[in-house]
Each structure stands twice: as C-alpha cells, then as structure tokens.
Amino acid sequence: MLNGLFSLVKYGLSSCDGGFGAGRGCTEGDFSSAAGQLTLSMPYTEVSDDDQAEAAVNKLSTLLTSGRLSDSNKEIIKKAYKEMLPDVDAALRMAQQLLLTSPEFHSTNIVKMSGESRAEPELPQPSGSPYKAIVYVMFGGGCDSYNMLVPHTCTGIKDMYAEYQQVREEIALPKSSLLEIDASTSNQICDSFGLHPKLKAVQGMYNDGDLLFFTNTGVLTKETDKENWRRDTVTQLFAHNWMQREAERVDPLKEADGTGILGRIADALNKKGRSVGTFSIERNTISLIGTPGLTSTPFILSRSGVSKFNNRASSESMEADIAAINNATAPESGVFGDYWSETLVKSLSHNKLLYDTLSDKQTDITFPTSYLGRQLEMVAKMIDSRAERGSDADMFFLSTGGWDTHSNVLDNMDRLFEDVDNSFKAFADEMKAKGVWDGVTVIETSDFARTLAPNTGRGSDHAWGGNYMMFGGGVKGGKIVGTYPDNLTDDGPRSLGRGRMIPTTSWDAVFLPLAEWAGATTDDLADICPNMDNFPASHFTDATTLFEII
Image 1 (cartoon, rainbow, N blue to C red):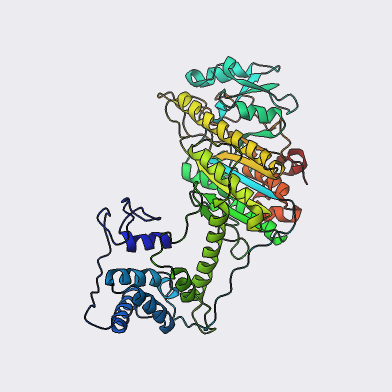
Image 2 (cartoon, rainbow, N blue to C red):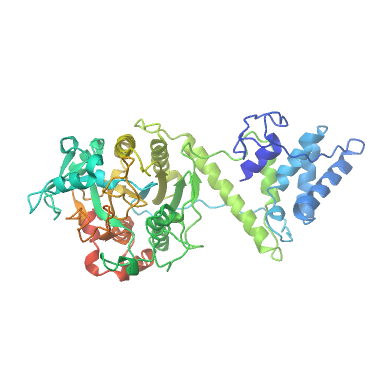
C-alpha cells in the first residue's frame, strides 16, 4: 500500500514502483504519462526555509491528520522538507510521503512519543522440529476431474469405461489415450484407472508411490444421499464463490468463522512452539487466516518475488525518517496509532528480510514460465529460504484459473493439464534437488467437479464431488482414497442428474490427516476441522495410511 501511495505522490497515477495506475513514467516529478496526479501546490518562495517548512507541514497536518500530527513528527518532516530545498515541489513530495507513513495518518489517535526508539522486531526462531511445508493449489473455476481420473479396466459386474463413454458422449477421452495406473489395492470399482494423457509426470509420481488421488470429494456438512442432500447441506452448492471459499475454509457451519483450514493448522503448530510462515501467491485467501494473536497475518507475495519497499527513494534519509516517525510511543498515547507503527516496523523488517534473501535464491530446475509455473518457482525459493527466515513450517496458497470449461472442454483440458504436469514435475524435481522432498506435501483442490454429461458447446457445467491429487515425499501414494462412483448414469445413487455426483469424501477427511502429517496431534483436530464430529469415525482415513509420519 505504501509503495502505491509513494508512487502516486512521485509519479502520479502510474504503475511505476507498485503504483495504482497504468502509466509507466518513472521519473519523479514528471507526470506526463500519468493518468492523473496530485495537484496540491505550496510555492512559498518568498519566506525563509524555516517558515516555508513550518507552513507546508502545518497545512499537510491539517489536510491529512486534522491537525493531529505530533510536534516531534512535525520536526522530522520539516527537517526532511528543508533538505530538499530550493526545489519546493520535491520538498512537498517528500513531506507528503513521510506524513503518509505516520501513525496520525493511519489512525484517529493523539500520538505521544516516548522519545525512545522502537525495538527492532525479533526474527522467528525455529523449534528444531523437522521442516514441513503444505502447498495448497486451487484450480479456480471447477476442474473437470472426471476426465482427470477415468475408469479403465474393471473386472466387476460391468464395464465402467463403457458407462463413462456413454455418459460423457463427445467429451469422453478415448481409452487408448489414457495413462493407465494400478488401483488393485485401493478397493475401487475398477482394477485400474486412466489418467488424462497430458499427465505423464503425475502418472510417474503415482507409480513411484509419491502421489495419490482422493475420489468423489467435496464440501459436505455431513454424509448424505440422493434423497436428503438438500436438507443435509448448508453450503450454497454449484456456485464458484461459495464452493471455492468452502474448500479454503473447511468449516461449513462457521464454528471458526473468519478462519481458514491452513490458518487453523498453523494455529495448532504455533501452539506447539513451531515457527510457522503463511504465504499466499498473488492474492488474498481466507485459507491462511488463523486465530488473531496466534498466527501472524499472511504475507502476500507476487510470483516474481517481493517488491522492494520504497524503490528509488526520494532521499537517502527516508528509511531513517520513517523509523523515527514510528518510534516508541508513551503509555498514554493512542493504542491504534501504536499498533500501526508496530505493524509497519515489523512489516518493513520482514519485507527487507524476504527481499534480500530471495534476491540470492536460484532454482536448480528450470520452471515453466506459465502463471502456475512461476508461482511454484516462488514457493520453491521460499522453501529454500526457510533457514534465513527461521521457519520450521510453512503454509502456502496459490491458484490457477481457466478451469471453468463451459465450452471446448477437451481442448482446454489438454492445455491446462499439460501446464499442470510440467509445473508439478518441475516443483517435485526441485524439492528433490534441494533435499526437502520428504518434508513437502502439495494438495490440489477445485471449486467442484463438472457435469459428466456434456452441454451443447462441447463443454461441461458446474457439479459437486470431484477427484483431486496430493503428492510429496512423505505421501504413501500409488492409491486412490475414497469411493469412486460405481454408477455414472442418472440412475446411480450418487448422481443428481447430468452426472453431478454427491461426494462420499469430505474436505475434512482430506485435511485432517494432512494436518497430522504437518505436526498436529489428536487434541488439535476438532479445532482444525470443527465439523468433524458430524461424520462417523469410519469417514476418515488414518494419517499413517496416507503419510510417512516423522
């Protein structure tokens, strides 16, 4: 935010240095390519420097803080103003930028300084526990996952591939194109399944025992059936925003409202003295929000890394001036102003640490330049920086779009899965090269699956239960968890029509064993998944079945 405000002051409405606009001019004071600019002018050229600084800072204090700017902060800003003279425009820009960092601007408090420097934030200290990272990948839009995991060879009472082909019609994948995987030990309707032909690396990880699938999985309030699903389900189904949000929250009854599944796992680890980082790539997400005061606010990274704070600073003394403006406050000072200053100083410290650390990090593996590939490359660099950050556990969230395939689903899935396969392979290879593969688990989800029956545009529409993958060095892979539907037609007990499948496996059953792998214990599980008591014990798979628990 501050980078954007500084950019507005220096360049106008521009994209330069994190600005809010689209213009690209990055010469301070040159607004010729900006979409707009701040027009305040104070040409006090016929008075002394002291009087000029006094008048300018007092006016800014009135305009931006209703006159609440403390005397000590006024002096800091006036000094910086005078150092920019005789260029009055540059002096005004400097004063505006410094005032925008003040606690008086960001709160309505009266701020009283103690005269002491604010203590430097302490770096987190690792607990010494084995490092664990959960990487949550959201396929935003609703992945057509019944073309990701397809019945292949079934020696039971019927040919499930023939039924799949009958229901999917023109959007069915040819059996000859499928990448066959063994499911003979997974207690499924078929002895083997076929993966989408673009998922060759995924097939390799499955065969190597590092990847598994959760089948017919989705948001559930409780186990339900074709007759009772409306009554038994509180989540608004078939809508992108509600179902994607619920996959990130895993709390349908809102018993831990305002928090997300990764945030609550982080809560459990923080209670045990672990040093836990929470990071989202490119966007905010509720999945990383934990209990206030227990788990820190998530850090949002770009896929290119961390933006440097105050790039091309207007003066060499700005960093010291900003620190002085946010020095320690007296006991009688307003609490909100102090909270702003404490948070700012901590954020700038963390930003500098990440910027400096990531600048030196290189991957051993070349990642795809796609949106997903760049995000996973950044996650890999963050994992590589765990020692510098003092972290022994991390939660990452990233997402990739384009999965809302209402038309041309076959062509779209070829493109999307090719990118997924290349990106997942690069990430797995990088984790192995860096020696941390056993401590990293990737869980992939989506809003929902899509209708098995096609629409008129050779696409598929919003559905419910779907198939998802999880992989990592600690995963006991080579299996399919849950129950693949044994009847894909509309007569099937799980079908709501057009191949919308009622899930048999909940998100709770996916994330609880993952939390245990990360270090949560039995006492933590009800807090991590507050809805777990709505399911019988048989609904869940023991963590030791899915993971090598260290």
